[in-house]
Every structure is written in structure tokens, then in C-alpha cells.
Length: 349
Image 1 (cartoon, rainbow, N blue to C red):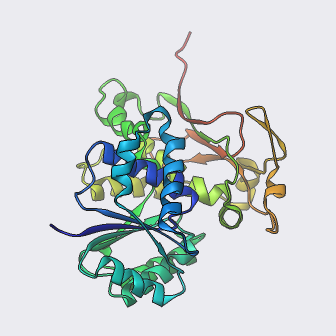
Image 2 (cartoon, rainbow, N blue to C red; image 1 turned 180 degrees about the vertical axis):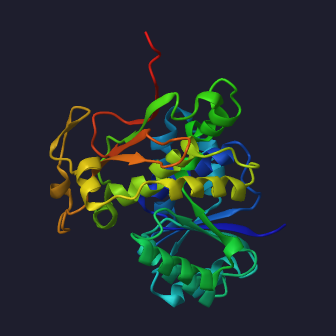
């Protein structure tokens, strides 16, 4: 049997607890995890295996609710392991190599700050773990600007072949997002109307009721604009505005998305003031419970990042000329909602 492993860097973090482990649990329920697959979480501090298993169990219970099944979790837990890995310590990566073996088909999921991506990839290569059977998954955002993004991609590219690097946006896994392609291109009713002649404007809203959830250092570096707009919201813009791809091959879809991005009207100093809004939440109540304001949650950080952003964007091509795209996202809002709103033009009365 082929040895397989999934190593989650940042295995005790928010993304791992809220999304990754629950998703893997449901894949286990569907029988979609490979036989013998080991799932290893990692963190900077040592954690006993029972404590890690209990943390994963609580995370899955919170997400699964009534669908939690104890025997199923026991089967899932048999796959779990924990490894203490400091991203700056090569010895920890050497120990990981001893643990999983250098010939194992391994996927490394980097659920950490993007600033650590290059160091982790380099240490994996130094431990002989960046081999032909290995894949590395980079979560958004990949850097906080063009310079840092290029530096990260260059560092990761020195360790892994480009075909073995997966840059993902977990938002694209949502069923509603995936349905956009069917709505656009498998629907003879809408496609002839999907242009500036029929559509007055488009609104895309991603509203969250949660706050920082322990991510103060990350969020103060990135904020809502880098955390949500340049990935999740722009992906939705691309799916709504793109031309029909030649095929559903990933490269064909990507090429059409890139064309949309190239047609986005650049902001100027004047248009930023007119077409964007940034803000931070203050102390209040959510679900009847008192919550702190953003500056109060930062505890030693500068509290400089925005937690809410709204943008009026324009796509300057023949299909969308004159149609504004209103993009909104924020934390600690009144309700949790992801909504794409297409406003068609009114017919003459």
C-alpha cells in the first residue's frame, strides 16, 4: 500500500479548526479519504497526542452539530498525529522526515502566515521532503503586496516544481460559488442578458458576524482588503464577469479570469476617495452578547487595519462598460451573509 500523509502547518490555528478538520471529517464519512492516509497537524508548541485529538474533536463537534458521530470520529482520530515544528528550526523538519518518511506521497497544507511560506518550503527541501511525490498548498493571501508575493513565489519555487505548487482560495469550494459557472454558461435564459445592455449594477457582499478569533497579529498586517477583497471577492467578480472559457480545463478558466482582472479600472488618488470606504468595528452586541471593539481586541498591536471595506469597481470592456460592481465585506456585522445581487435594468413603462 502506498504511504500517504497530509501535513497541516498551523494545525492548531483558526482555519484548521473551523474548516480543514471538519472538512476532512466529512470526507471520512463519505469514504473519500485514501486508505492509510495520515493527517498530521503541526504547531510551534509541543502538544500531547490526546490533547490534539481533543482539540480536533471539539472543533468538529462545533461544526458538525447533530451530524457528529462518535464511532466515525474514532475512525478519523486513528489517522491523526501531531508534530512540533518551528518554521525557523531545520531540526524540526528533519524530525518530521523521520516521522513520515521521505518516500511518502505527502501534501503540505500551509495554514500559517504567508510570511512563513518561503521558510517552510526551504526547510522542507532541506529535509528531503520536497520530492517528486510531494505537493505544497498555499492558502490566500500570498503576500501583502506585489513585492512580497513575488518573493514568496520565488522562495517556494526554489523548493518545489511549479506543477507541485497548489495556490488555493477555499472560498471557491462553496456550492453557491461553483454554481455560478452553471448559472452563467448552462442557462440559455440568462446568458443573452448578461451584459451592460440588461444589467444596471452588481452587488457582492460577504458579511461576517465574527471578530478576530485570536488572529490579531495576522489581521493587523492584512486587514479586510487583503484578507477578503483581493481573493474571495475578486474571484466572485471574475466568475460573474468572465467570458465563456474554451473548456473547463483549469488553465482555460484561469485565462478568462485574468482577462477580467486586466480590465479592472485602476484606482487613482481621486477615485479612492470617491469609490472606497474603510472602517473598523467598535464595541457593541452580537447575538445578544457584548463584544469588544477592534482596537480593544488588538492587545499590543497597532489596530491600523480596516475590518470593513466597500468598493465601487468598474470593468472596462465591451460587456461591462458602465456597470458598477459594488463589493462589500466586513466583520462584526449584523448578520452572516454571502450574496451576489444582479440588478437588471427596468423595462420602459
